[in-house]
Image 1: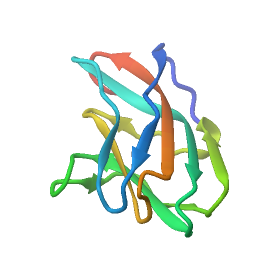
Image 2 (image 1 turned 180 degrees about the vertical axis):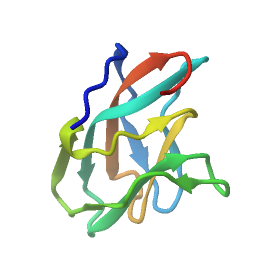
Image 3 (image 1 turned 30 degrees about the vertical axis):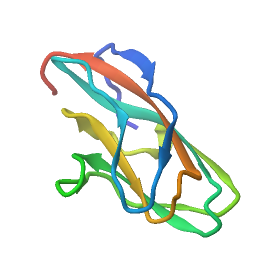
Image 4 (image 1 turned 90 degrees about the horizontal axis):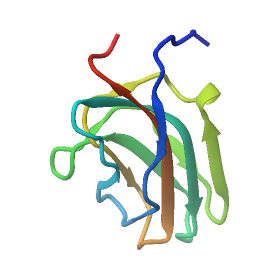
Length: 118
């Protein structure tokens, strides 16, 4: 794990209920800031295993920015910063799931930084 010398502000997004194959805003980025995901919490109650994708943009302009994450039916999932890529987002973070009907819920905790990346 690399040492990051910039000090950011930790914030949590709102709990988001996902509909299958429909990107939704998971974290609205503050103006003039960038963000790194530090914790991801998810629950899959959709009745089937699925895939979670994290990126930017809403349909039809969704662009996946991180590797897909398997979400197992009836299970919760927590991934902390040690296991997440150190990807710095410059736009609102969106998520989509391959299963849903509002039974897949996700919450992101991010660290926001002011100014340019680097």
